Image (spheres, rainbow, N blue to C red):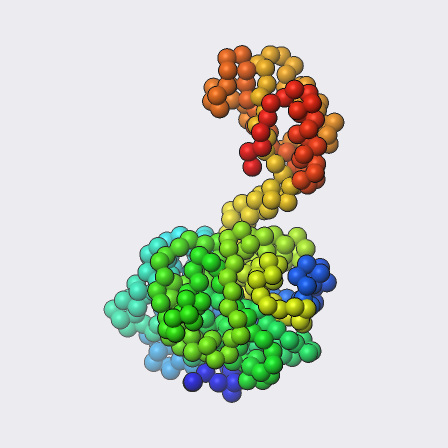
Length: 403
């Protein structure tokens, strides 16, 4: 294999002055929740918000002068795009990035702000990559692959070297996995330094391309799927990354959309840390006890924090509903003066805060002379919701929960 510990160490010497040595603090709260001794490797604090800077910069710094003069082009759902744009512009290199049409606005805007020409093309990363390769051939630009490149993999592997220095007696590392560039580099760095440390990869259930490749023994192309973990939404694992994963990675698991959303919310509430979907999958696996780890000193890689604000708002809303801190009730009333006042009195007595109301006299099977009101309430948990419903029933209000 051409990716080696020596190559990763050289990459670190090459990029260290331009890459943030991100912290890896211990979390008492998450340790209690997961049953591990959890240390969060906060690479969402990199300049462009994700670990991708490591590999992109290492690749750029290894280019020949003629390759730099031709300009660079990449395909990315966002994080590799921003990393390439920032570090290429800082070195006077022209960059062009092809991004999927549905890439979150925060990522496309940031990529353009870092100095790249942004081209929106295709419904997913693979279609964007095909277009980037076509443009590279057409215009003579240098293509920078987001994960299936030795220099990129070795750059990402520098994160593993940092973990070995930051966490004494490290026993396990849990890493997000898309095409495999990050876990391939980190696993090589970790296992070649201490083979007793376990390395576990986590994918989204929507696109478990590395899991399928490991099962098949070679990369396979999966059907396109939408996922909130767009940063690891890769349909086909890398030809270079798969052998490294097969050699060094102990376990691969997957998490679903709801589990990822919960991890994002937990990080935001408990750790005051903003993670995107792809950045939160490693924690999601521990929160849901998807791995075989039991009480180990475990580094959890928070790979990125570039999340669309609208998506974050929806995740927060859904999380509040699932925790019983917000609910919506559909309540039937007689259409007469004072009917709403009586209802709000019951809700006030139950100490429920009304967030939103919507009347309807026509739909939902409403009889003439009756009305229906949908009320969104802030509540204190499942028991509180049941107390409110019990009070409504005792007062004769027909109602149903419509979360």
